[in-house]
Image (cartoon, rainbow, N blue to C red):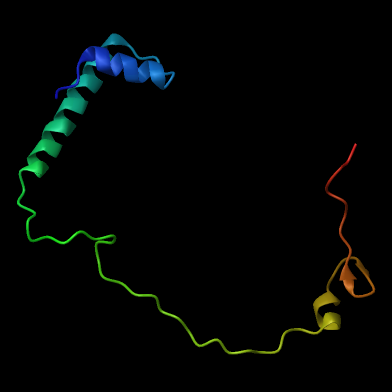
Length: 97
């Protein structure tokens, strides 16, 4: 089904876009070319082609979950610009006024 100039104007209106007359004519031709290309794709024989989610086969690659010690509280806080006992002290970012 070919796209008409009126269709392009309607789509532009829905998208809240404004175009010059020459641009509308250009878009009409471009959209019709795209649709004719898609029609060519519909002619392909896909009887023996299985549907797929990804173009290449893949699998998840997981590493072993090995527990390692984390930094101590003192080590984590040693470069903190401001701290309170064993916590980072940061400026208030939410104003409740």
